[in-house]
Length: 63
Length: 63
Image (cartoon, rainbow over all chains, first blue to last red; front, top):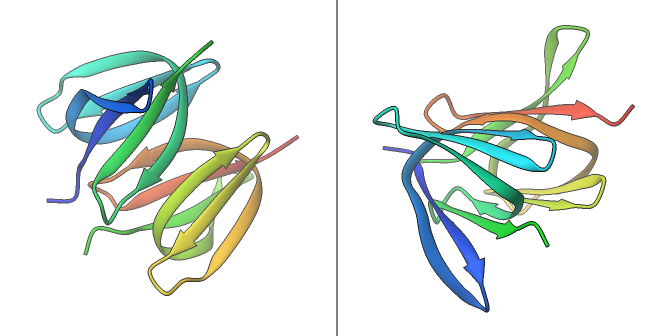
């Protein structure tokens, strides 16, 4: 499958936020995420980097 | 493979911008993209939506 895991970058460490992310929609200062299983989360912050081959979405909290 | 194609949404139509995108990095009002083959592009605008299962990155130009 081609989903990715979303992590929050906190003090140089990566903390798992949501697994198996399918959809990502930036909405102003927030990011709406939905995974394979229909689980939905809204993150207050922004996308730092996405690497699809590494199945990784890196998020950073709004300051 | 798990890369996605990036499209620009223009007047309701999707125009192919870059195929086989691996990396996406938002940088202020721009988005840096790199594909499987090392091709790099910088787009002036923002991410409207990403769907990994549909292998699709939808971009919109800055207004």
